[in-house]
Every structure is written in C-alpha cells, then in structure tokens.
Length: 532
Ligand SMILES: Cc1cc2nc3c(=O)[nH]c(=O)nc-3n(C[C@H](O)[C@H](O)[C@H](O)COP(=O)(O)OP(=O)(O)OC[C@H]3O[C@@H](n4cnc5c(N)ncnc54)[C@H](O)[C@@H]3O)c2cc1C
Image (cartoon, rainbow, N blue to C red):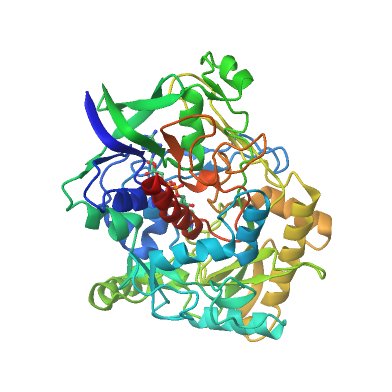
C-alpha cells in the first residue's frame, strides 16, 4: 500500500499552506489528496470571474442549506470550492483578519496560544504587503495582499458618505482595530487572483517529497485502535488507500471535515447510529457549533457614475477586455466588493459588530453578488453581522460518502442577530441619502420606499438575505465537552495521528471574511505538527 509521512486531505486555503510547510525541510514525504481538479479555468484567475465560478458545478461541491426556519424556510445555495486552491480559488479576494479581540476571546475560551499576540506573527509570516505598519504587517510571505489599482468613483463617494455619518476612514483595517470605512485589501498579484495554490502549493510542487493527487475523493479514515492509520479514497471510480506514518491532517473545510469524521465513526454516537455508522470515537461536537455570516442588502439606481452594469456589455465590454489584457485594470480587475466599513450598531458595544460591503453594481433579484448584473445602472450596499449568536450544524445523512450532508446554519435564530441586521439596513438607507453618495442616486430600487417599519425591514432580510460563504466552527478547538480539536496540537481529541487544520476549528466567528484566519490557522498548525 502507498505510504507517506503526512497525508493532507484537501488542497484548499489551509491544505496548500500545510503542503508547503510540511514539505519544506525535504525530510518528510507528503501527499495532498484533492477531490477537485486543476485550477486552470480562466475565470479563476480574472478577479471579475467570481460570478462565473461561484456556482460552476465543475469547480464546486454544489451544496445548499436545509430550509431555514427563520428565513422563510428558504434553502440557500452554499458554494464551496472543489478545485485546487479550494474555496480560495473561487472566493471574493477580500483580505480581512478580524479584530484582535476575536483571538483574545479564543484564548479566554481555553484555546491557549491563540491570543492576538500569539497569532499575529503567523499573519505576518503569511503575507507580503506594501502598506501599513511594520509592527502588524508582513513583508515577505507567500500571500500577496494588494490595494485596488483603480478605485471606482462610487466607492469614493460611499466612503465619504460613511465619513459624513461619523465613521472615520481607517488607514488599515487589518491592524487589529478595524473600526472605520475603507477600500478592501485584496488577495491579488498584478491584477490577478493570488490563490492559496499560487502562493503556496505551486512553489512547493518543485520539491521531490510532495505529491498532489487530484480528483481524489477521501471517503473514510481507517484506524488501528485509537490511532488513525490511513484513508480510503476514490479516483475515477477506483478505490485506493494511502497510509500515514506520522499524521493525517484534515483540511477539507467546515462542511467536509465534520462530514468525513462522521463517515469514519467519529462524532455524536446517536447521530452516527441514525445513519448506520458504527461509532468508533464519541465526540458530540463534530458538526455542531457551526456559524456563518448572513448578509442582506439595499440597492439603488444611479446616474452619471459609470457603474459596472453599464460597462459590462457591448462595445464598452470589449474596451474593458482590452484594457484588462494590456493593463490589468478596469472592470475585469475588480472583485465583487470594493469598499466597506466596520461600525457599531448601538452604543455600549466594545467594538464594531457590523461589516459593510459596497459594489458599484447592482444585481438581478437573487443572492447578493452572485447572480447576473441588473440591466440598469446601480449600486449595492450590503451588511452582515460580525459575530452572530445563531448556530447550526453539519450532519451526515447517510453512510454513503456521495450523499451530501445536511447544512443548517440556522440564520437569524437569535434575537440579537435580527436586531443588528435590521439596524444595519436602516443605516444603509441613510447612506444612500447622504452626500456625496446621494448625488448619484435616482431612487432606492431594492427593497424600495414601501419598507419603513422594523417589521418590514426584518421581512426584507428574511426574504432576501444570503450567506457570505463563511462557515466555521463545526470541529471547534477548545477544552469543553463540545470541543473536537486540541488547541495546542490540533489533534482530534482522544485520537492519535489525526489532526484538523481548516476553518472548522475556529471556536467562535472572527469579525470578517474567513480566509485570512484560516490561512493563519494552517500556518500555526504546521508549526505544531512539525514540533511533534
Ligand atoms: C464563494 C466564496 C466567496 C468567499 N469570499 C471570501 C473573501 O472574499 N474573503 C475571505 O476572506 N473569505 C472568503 N471566502 C471564505 C474562504 O474562502 C474560506 O473561509 C476558506 O477558503 C476556507 O478554507 P478551508 O481550507 O477551510 O476550506 P477550502 O478552502 O474550501 O478547502 C477545502 C478543500 O478540501 C477539498 N476537499 C473537501 N473534502 C474533501 C475530500 N473528502 N477529499 C478530498 N478533498 C476534499 C475541497 O475540494 C477543497 O479544495 C469565500 C468563500 C466562498 C466559497
């Protein structure tokens, strides 16, 4: 049977980092098993390709949520990358670390070694960033973090309107203190996506001790007693096995990692019996504690702004294509969100509880940022609560690995989450009415002036909100009875030879998009694994 020192399941945001770090010394043999295929699709590289990749079934696991009891029983499409680079190859490019308090909270919850001071060196080690303070920004890491090359006039007006409402412009929202308004920093290099595969995997593939096995769907972890020994995977219908002399590291992401553990008999014994999987190791937290950001939006028709709607067809599009080809600027170099902010929805909060998104484009009815552009010129203002209280789960529905798990984020289950997002919607409308942004507005097109009371705003949020693609926490680190992963070693608690390093280990939600935190987790986990 095939045997290596380390088996990594998943070549996504975390898996690529682990492949790079675990193979760096040349002393260890490493195999990365990825269910998806090559990341050579043109729209992966071009930033504006987001809309074309996000639901592409060739690049995607094609999940959707279970009906949400607090969002009018809607099912929501739930994209996850199934391609080299994982969700890092289809995401929205935004680089957001969160607040220093997020990580201090992790430490207070028992995750020793995960305070802001502990994790900051890993954020710095990971990135190359030109701007910001040396004390908090990295200068020579694999990840390229760049500013927008050509900010849109509407983004500038949006930032100025935020300032007029009292939200200061912040020079670097990734310094640990994020409050303020800004243009988003992006995971790009020279106008192209800079994915985890670009940053970490490809440079490491020149090493003779790293092997990438594509189209390899890992279906089961096998054990010798309490020690994980190897995995079974399928390639093109053929079943294969590979053993790990040292460790198997699960980096399949917040949906697939708990699913794989459950299929392998690790989880809540009651859940496992329900699908006829023999419980091997009881860990009730596997698949529980899942959280996600839920966003809602307000849109307006605009005039005189050159919105992306006007530039995305006909001769103007031809011009944009040529511009991008020769200068790597313009419409095609833009990610779905351009500007944003972090603010407090009510006095008395210690730090911002709301994230803002802005796009100089409007979308046809459907999920924000993911559906086709509207035919009329417009702009979209979005918001999502940073640290939602609502929790959901990921649960295997069958012992057959091909059957998708149930994903129930339970959006808006908690009153605090509902109050915060309703307050944010009213703030977004005020922004539309504030100069200089209001100079461009013809009218609010969505949801429109008929929505006035808090009840109406909540109905709007329930009916039209969507995921911002940030599931975390389904195999959380910790020391309580629902913890799945040991925070010091990243081992699955009670087992040997099996570790988890991906977004699923976050014990609570970080204040913002989850890629940067996942990248940092993998950087830190690689040190823990090599130290052993
Ligand atoms: C559409 C979208 C937009 C996003 N936008 C942003 C953004 O702008 N900024 C930001 O910070 N974050 C964003 N995110 C979130 C961010 O990309 C994720 O938090 C991050 O990629 C999670 O990393 P991960 O390693 O946990 O999982 P992933 O990156 O999803 O990687 C998991 C990998 O494991 C593979 N895999 C899973 N199961 C198996 C198996 N059984 N066998 C073999 N391989 C397997 C998958 O195919 C995948 O390649 C976005 C996500 C999506 C989906």
